[in-house]
Length: 116
Image (cartoon, rainbow, N blue to C red; front, side, top):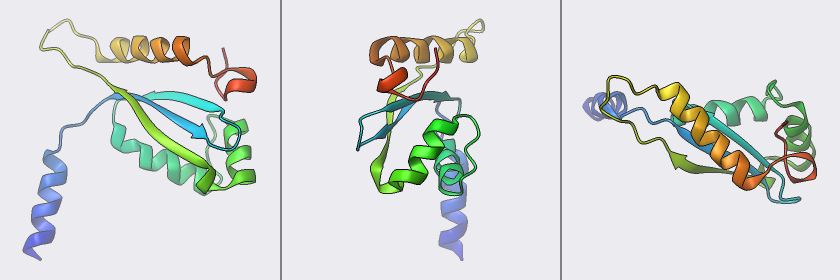
């Protein structure tokens, strides 16, 4: 019981990291690029896809259903480096970071699930 309490406390103390991630269909190499202010929430994205409830992108959901979860890989592309600056806007910085990766990987049309 003590070990469980220690693990729970350790989880709570783990810093929340923001970043950009990709979901890659390994069958057709299509990509979905997204960002989140809490990379731990990727488990929730995976759960939504597994339960056919991923509403943000129906095409990704349809191909997940078609190919199965084994055909998809989740990768963190970059973690947001936070600054100790009172004017640092995490949301803006995360949007810029996502834009950088969208520009670089171009996950649109036949290459991906993102919409431009």
